[in-house]
Length: 169
Image 1: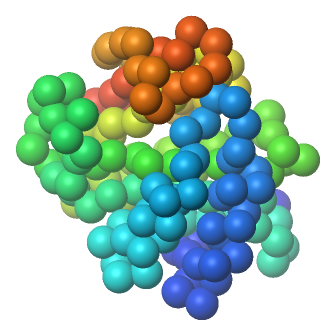
Image 2 (image 1 turned 30 degrees about the horizontal axis):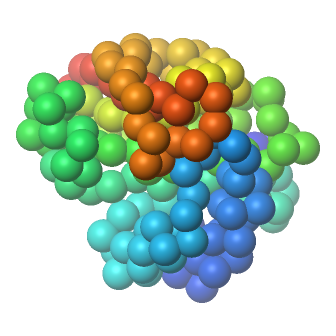
């Protein structure tokens, strides 16, 4: 049975290695400096991370920003000032296609609703079929797709932005 919990500060180094090892593929944009910066943000509490565990083994993670802390290139896509940007969703390749990524997205959606957030935003490579399926199952809708050669060097070189509208509680 998969359990989820907030990442602990003492495991961030291991989670960074997990992200690079399991998230690295032609479809993902994971430059070393950006990954280092992402984990600095986690370390100071600027961002949040949830891990999916099978027993005590990490099989997935999701990293998201605080409400309203949306990267500049997303601002024109956010209909709400308190949107949450999902920075990373990674599942161990041995645990892929079991709904773990979708469950992690659903967990962040639940957290967002308790914070009265009305929208989640995420991006992916246009041709990343695994991410597309996971995001589709979680209810995300593509709202834009554009050529992004600075971040994408494989396939179509396009980034798709997806949104999930949330009902607030």
